[in-house]
Image (cartoon, rainbow, N blue to C red; front, side, top):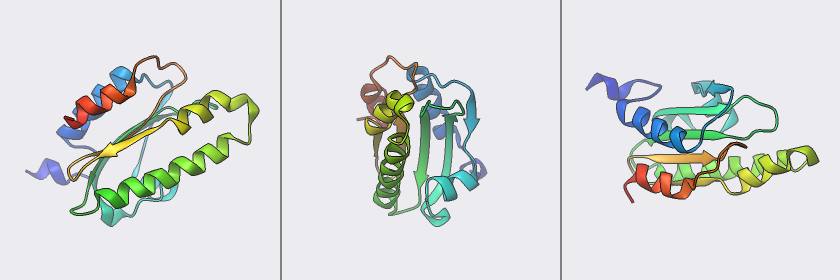
Length: 141
């Protein structure tokens, strides 16, 4: 179906993001765009079939929910790139003592998935849920 080729989100991705947001409420939501995917996360456009994500636009809150449908054979590349992004964000927040909570949340980010779906979740400062089980539910693990 044509819907699966849309740049931002598909029914599957929408439902994954909604489930993760239920566990990880994100304040002041900022929708992740194609530009963010490429420049902020460092993902190659060719590696990503579709995506949907939101992050907190609050200073000092690293909250993030991102679901990606990787291109064929690219799931591991996508996860490796997201891990590099995670390390960069840990280093960034490490420069600011007042962002210790965000730094800890980034250090504990979950990046998981497979050929059909890769997710990255960073707890928001307000999150009290176990995001590991929320991610497993979404991935059907």
